[in-house]
Image 1 (cartoon, rainbow, N blue to C red):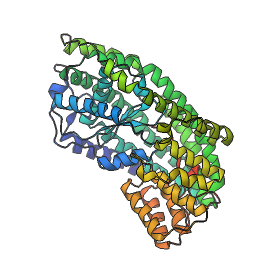
Image 2: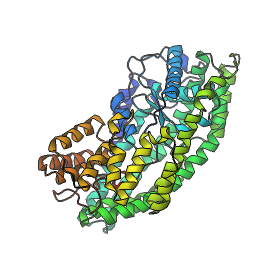
Image 3: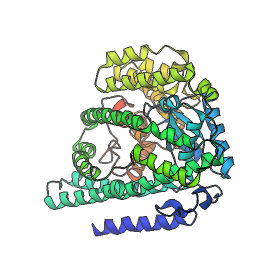
Image 4: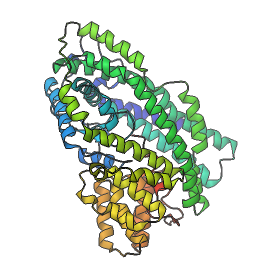
Amino acid sequence: MRVCRALAFLVLFSLVGCVTTKAPQWLPGTFSNERTYLQQLKPVEGQQGLNSVGGGVDVKLTQSDGLGLIDLPELEQMLNAQLLDIKQAIGFTSLPGHVYVLASPSMNARVTADGNIYVPVGMIVDIESADEMAALLAHELAHTILNHTDTDIIASIQKKATAAWAMTAQLTGELADAGVARRIRNAYALSLATEKVLNPSWTRQQETDADKLAIDILVASQRNPNAMVVLLGRLGRWEKVNLQLKEENAQMKSVLVDAAIARFSQNEYQSSLLKALTPLGSEVEGRIASLSETHLSSEERLVEVRSYIRSHHRRAALPDPKVQQWKRVAHSLAVKRQVSGVKKTNEAYRLMAQGDLRRADKILKSLKARDVRAQTYYKVMTAMLADVQGNYGQVIAATAEADQLRYPSYRLFLMNLAGRQQKGRSFSEQKLQMLYEQFDMFGRPKEYYADLIWLAGQAGSTPLEYELILRCHVAYMGNAALCGGDGKPAESSATGNDFVGGMLDLFVN
């Protein structure tokens, strides 16, 4: 336990030392209230987060996560023009990153260590002016400028260390021992203390800092700073939507975990891995989470924002919001069709997870618009449902033109080959190798290891099969529930790309 603590604080100290050399504002409380936040910053050439994977890989990972990205060129062009405009206004033109539209029913935009900003399509339609969107983009850009994504590393390291504890105990059958169980609980509590007690104090300050810097950015780009006030006014309703989705996802995850254990656990080793930390983690996390909220409430943020505007931008120009052009593009029928398509796809997935395949199929068939059916999220859901139904011909048809999509999910390439295998159509080892090379190009998303291992076994490619097993266990210690055990790949009577294996967190974008 002492080693864990020492490691945690050593990691924390080393990260702070690295980051503060280029942006001291990474830690809370480092801004002076005498001047605007923007006045206390200077551009950093080519600034990227410590956990950056590369802008292109970051996009490919995201388009392969859940239902991925939506192809809406005119909307994307407008959003990226806004982002470039505010970067130029503050002199941070070297910052990496672009704006992308998420096929997610959530109302939660996010920025990655590579500076890419992902905004759910429903959130875009709910925003009423270009100024509000500029406020949102400025807020996410502020997180990049202040290196806030770097704090995620600490929680990630702690989670992996704790998962290793739990996995070892499960595999050795020692969890019944009170001493071992206590050590696991303590290690897990330390992990959660990092994420839900220590990190929230950072996160709360980070959100406030990002709000205030965003106001400076709005003023510098000659936009109305009150757009941030209007945007935050919507936050309470958005939080309710996200909470409902989180609860629905938790219910789906419970169903899917049970299904995964039943369908993938061919031995005690795999069953232990799948069950590791599930009840214990929920109990401890619930207790600690109750002590600290991760984010400030919308009311608290509004108080901070209004106070900052009065202190630093009382005399700032207040131009009228730009509404007409924004609504022409962002509220167009084409965009609204995608919002409806994503919501219905979400509902179809929920029904499929519950085993109601007939209603799920009915909802998908109700999506008749050509531009909806041409999107990645529709093709992914169609292929997944066909896979569960055992209709491998439809799986092949739904995934056949994945390479012609602007934002294809890796899932489509994988399911195409798996569908061919299930249909009895042979495929060459060259095709498998191409799929493996694509896996590297897509950033090696962990949820696809099990399927690749299965395909390699089906193709008789033993070297690739064992290489994947090794990489899966080494790279994702504690999360490699389906990597296989005892030197053998995971076996399953289900399809190689069963929806349970890779979709436990489908809608947590």
